[in-house]
Amino acid sequence: MNKLLDAREKINKADEELAKHFCERMAAVKEVAEYKAEHALPILDASREEEIIKNASNRFENSDIKAHYINFVKSNMSISRSYQAELYPAAVSGIIYDTESVKRLHVNLDEDSYDVIVGCGALEFSDKYFNLNRRVLILTDSRVPIKYADSVAKKCASPFIYIIEQGEQSKNLANFEAILNFMAKNRFTRSDCVVAVGGGVVGDLAGFVASSYMRGVDFYNIPTTLLSQVDSSIGGKVAIDLGGYKNIVGAFYQPKCVIVDPELLLTLNIRQVRAGLAESLKMATTSDAELFAIFESGEFLNDIEEVILRSLLIKKGIVERDVHESGERKILNFGHTVGHAIESSSDLLHGECVALGMLYMCTEQIKNRLIPILDEIGLPSGARLDADELYKFILRDKKASGENITVTYVNEIGKAELRKMPIEKIKDYL
Image (cartoon, rainbow, N blue to C red; front, side):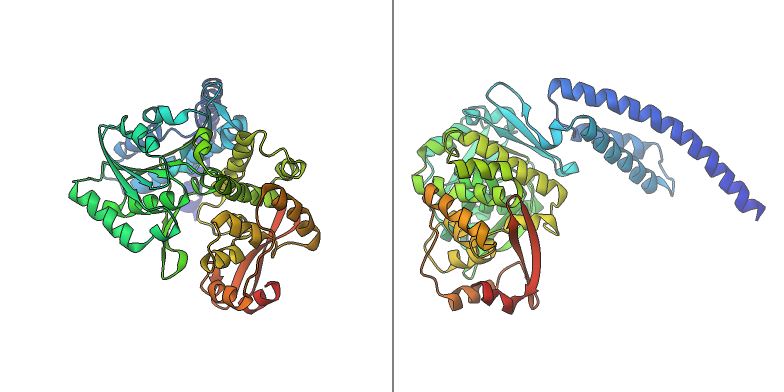
């Protein structure tokens, strides 16, 4: 018993010393946070953390507690990041200004963290934000003006442009295999990278290729549609379609950096712009009553960059709290349960399908507020749909689990709830 008490007394004394050193460490962390705030630097410094872990490893060459000490160090770094976030909230939930016209949002996902660069003309500075001094596969599609891919290629040490046909039908297993073969034929290594220049289809396919080639190469994203700029370009969900079912084969794979340049929207047709606004309206309805008010006032097109930024902040915050869609992130599926089924059985664009899908999953009062906004944007607020056909596709939905499905439902603007229900009950909504 005395041996146990002696050991505990030693632990108590060690804890006292640790407490003193912890206070000293956090005081230094505060100084670091102040410097980062002053110089608009992100909270995460991956190279610095790698250096700390390496030094920690060297302190315990052959000790049986080496792994535990490294975990202790990692825990300290996580606590430090949280403390910096309290002192320096702009780096977590706000906007950092690189220049007057270029803003930077930091998506804080520990070792998978990355920046989203937002600003008119940002495309011209791709080499500032991307490491392009290597082989670079630039994936784009036939609808995207080739000048965008060329702009990136001019900044690369060894560029390879690969063009797929526009449209959801290109997000398939055959293209996935063809691109991997192209990379292997051109001797891409694990040190090389993939850059997506296009909408959600290009981003999904490029990201899945990057996640798979040699078990993962760096991935960068330059979304060229409003829909991909406000939603699919961040969050790390990459996928292809299979057997007529959307995004059924995929992975979570975070980009290294994203450039959102609103000037790229100038070449979009109006239908694509409207489809993008549907995703932003979706996020406003579930998470931001102020953004919803902008839509309701009809001011949403007067400052499209503000709509993009507010949408990205919503998506960023949710992804940071639930990176693998195990809980809160499912809120972003508002409109998607029925919307994906509509998309699989029609020729409508993804955003148009989400617009319709939202109307199935909200109160009558919310529906009556959404319909005038959809009409103002120019999105469909009604369509001739076959309920049995929709139900067939919903049965294959990724959100279905056994005999149940989780849907996102809105009772109040700016708030949403997840409802788990027997999949049969979805027929009541249809």
